[in-house]
Image (cartoon, rainbow, N blue to C red; front, top):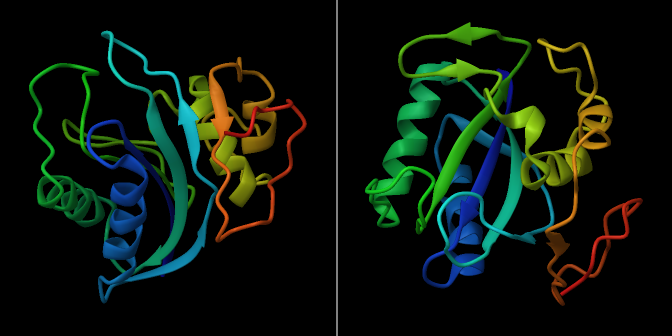
Length: 176
């Protein structure tokens, strides 16, 4: 079984409910076992003017190949009403395969590690909760080191009464 990290995001509809349901949908696949799930964060959108996002990450163990896992993620996005009309535009659900073991891969449809992961606080903050010492196979840096190199402003922890534990907060993230 491979270990994979997946980013979840939404900024249309009931985004918190959507990302939580998407995480549950992933864990319902017979070839996937949910290992851990981050807290959720509100994030200022990148790209055209649009609502803020809810973002988080999950770590899974899977028997699926990277390509098969990507196809499942795309199918789950469609199940939740994802429409690809505008590059970096608003979406009901965005699922990105970030890491798959230490695999480095570049095909027309999939690049691993995710090509923009190391520049995105909204990915690195929740991912550092789960895998702070995972080494990015491209840079040789840990996820925690990558997180510490990005601007973390615009990312706020969403308080969740059903999950009272708080993740490490060295950057002073606001809690909503």
